[in-house]
Image 1 (cartoon, rainbow, N blue to C red):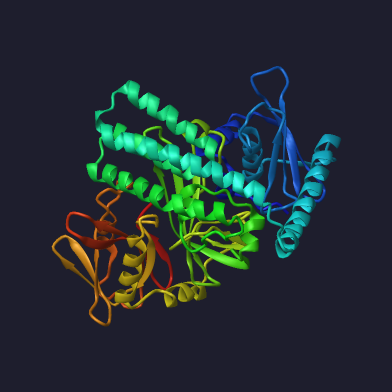
Image 2 (image 1 turned 90 degrees about the horizontal axis):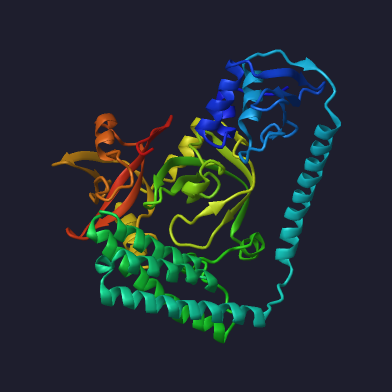
Amino acid sequence: MIKLDNNIIESLAPNAAAAKNGSDLVKKGKFNNLQINADQDLIWGECAGSGKNPYKCSVDFVDENNPIGRCSCPSRQFPCKHALGLMYAYAGGNTFTTGEAAEDILSKREKNETKKQKKEEEKISLKEKAEKPKKINKAALTKKYTAQLQGIELAEKLFYNVLKNGIAALDNKERKELRKQIVELGNYYIPGIQAAFTTLIDLANEEVNSTLLIEQLNRIGSILKKTRPYIQERIDNPELAPELDSSIEEQIGTVWKLTDLITFGLYEENTELVQLSFNSYYINSSMDVNNEGVWFDLKTSKIYRTFNYVPAKAKKYIKSDDTTFGVVQLSDLYIYPGDMNPRVRWEDSVNDSREVSKQDMTTILDAAQSNYTEVVKAIKGNIKNPLNNKTPYALLALEKAYMVGNDILLEDANGSIITLRNDQDSISIINTVESLKNILPNEVKGMGLLVMFNSDMTEGLLYAQPISLLTKDQIIRLLY
């Protein structure tokens, strides 16, 4: 039996427009010959389009958590509006007669089953491959590291030219030339450094706080200073392992194979994640979007992040991440090298989930940190490293909360205080401190608060921005 409703269909759509267009097709009566197989795990039909012949579409639910839409239309969206419309027709109660699927549909299903089986075999072979002693190709590694060092030398020249001439003083012609040189960095296996320069140019083109521009210049300078000896060490000794507890590989832009992550023990099996926060924001003037999720691991009590980068030009074709309210159940979780809140990824469908229980909320709240002195010490130690994430997340256990001026102060049982303040350079228009003021009760003991730390350079103050309030029953998201 196919389980389908509007919420599930919207979660499968590549974007809101595609979902609406699919729903409109049903309202306009565009579908004909709606059928379902005897096993009730495959639906198909015809949808009138702009041409003479209708489009033939189908949706396969052999894996109910990951339905596959197919269509004869030329759309590059998956699923397309016709496949989405077919699902809306089923969810809306339209009549589907029982029939035999066409040979081409069954053939595609068989191919997908073979592909799925192959993927499972690849997963097993990945682990087997990772367990075997890896033969290091020193010549290939040395060649790659040498190219990276050359790229860093080119990046240093660009950086010093920018410092010498002043980025604000560059005219359009000079900025265009600088962008060409930044593109050239892509030939040296250092996409992270290349992205840092691109961000610098984007900031220079926008009316932003000069502090952000200065911070980005400092960040690039630190990256170049740290990566040169790091790469040189590996040229001298190609067998040297990468640093797994720092973000230097991420700053360089290392592309990790799953076998590499498994080899270094950077994965978990059979784990469950709860999303504590989700936010989408523009990252540059080109309107490219980053979707950031913050997750709690019920198995290890660690906080992870996910990033889904969606270029503006491909927004119609790339499915964006979204808010997830259930517990995501994963057979394999892959963890990238990094400092606090490392980035993670998985291959499983997010539809493999269950509802968040009271026991889950108890597990999360029990893991909240109650000693603010230790939290602040760890955060400061992390931020001190110029390559590390400057806005780490932490889950705080609440004891007392009160107002001082416009700020909310949190106080733990030992009298240590953390100031809550809205991020002055926030990527969101939502003032989460004001939102928290409206819902925070007088008695907060037993609650938890997900915060994002930041520092005010002018005041020399480390503060935290409230992101989500956690009670014994629910997660109240302040940033969205």
